[in-house]
Image (cartoon, rainbow over all chains, first blue to last red; front, side, top):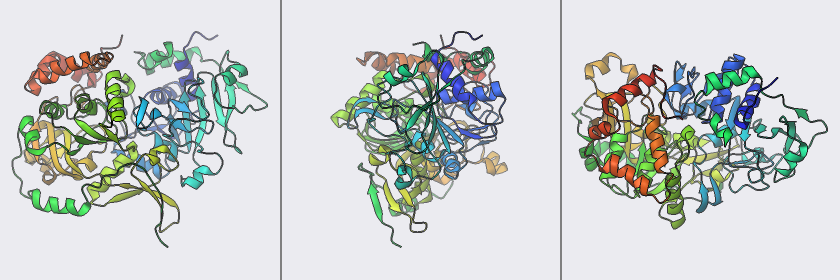
Length: 259
Length: 342
């Protein structure tokens, strides 16, 4: 039934399937652009993408290379500024935001700033960008990550963007707007959600060919396991065709899945 | 009820320019008269920039960035710069690659977004931070946007509802307080008043009445209006009559602006929405030069494109001249396929 695909294609397709229709989505640079564009093109959803520097409701004729590039305002409804774009999110209009990172912990806190000491970095990454605000304001934060033991760790080196911080009640205690937080995590191995009571990351569905043992072995913290685990359907021929031909024909981002 | 400070970020917030000082500056140093401010990039940078300045840069990443001005800053070696870095990329790399920066306020730095992370630029920042040659105060794109906005409003800070609970707060210069009205906790981010804003736009008259005719505004309203000096480069110079005919399209009025520099294709290799697209091949050439972590290839890039030319016109010839620029114009309107991707 299905053909060969790489992990980037798989994660994009799985995340894209979960977007609900008629929602406002904050789109960061990279995979989130693929996910949003695929949802528009493969599922014909009436979603409104917002880019953090001002693009509101563009048609995105080709994959944007930057959150500001002209594709993010192409036939848009409005070209605003960054303050306005973030104010819209702060005021409660951000239904979804998509984030990635170099490290994640069991509460969905993300590091995209630094590995090692902040003042003597082993690796310095670009930093928060829009991520901290997205993770604070979006009703549902969706996370997309490569699933490796060095990335899924007990304690991340630096909390760039808030997940459930130290667990239940800690977002509220910190003063973050209520009702927000990480919703799902899409990885090279499966889909994960967060247990309502403990706010800990929980296996939700396995990607094709992946076992529960694979997930446990490649996770640096104790992953919660529900009594029933779903299986993610592989990408369909149609989804792959649209993703490859219409969303990222030059494989600018999809190509990274081949490494 | 009292407004109590609950928590403080650990890094430097540098309230070097206060709202009152900014008011005084604007009273004394900004002519109310419409005067001809057209000059070349070399003169503008010499006249309005100095070592140690706090600066901001227009656009985002490689979109609507003032490259003609930045090349001049690099050539004149204006150094010890304090740079506001909401959504920055190759523009700030031009400065850090050449050792001209002593402080960064990131948002977003180093990366070329979808086009990847330039290794040598990253190594330079990592080493400079470790040696203490560059100090950092961590922010994010939202707080940077609001810090510029607060400066534009002439107020000392903006209350915001994010950053709390994270290291982004811990390594910032923000404070968390209890809101005197709602009792909820809010974060206060300090206004970022700058010495100079380097801004590229589509159109301006000779006085600095300027327009951004396409694309996102990014933080640029705040950057212009919160800065003591504004060097504005523009793709085109238009008549004031044109501006008056459609005043709703004016991005900022003349009195904020100190220099108007005519710079066609002045954002190259960046995108100028509605005019020309990103020069993907050039950005990949830059990223490839950054693969060499001895720094030799990157030095070669600057020797060739910045120090090897006297003007931005000469640079435009070097990157492929009219033929290349026409291609980028066609690419903007989807008339041709992008090059550079293997």
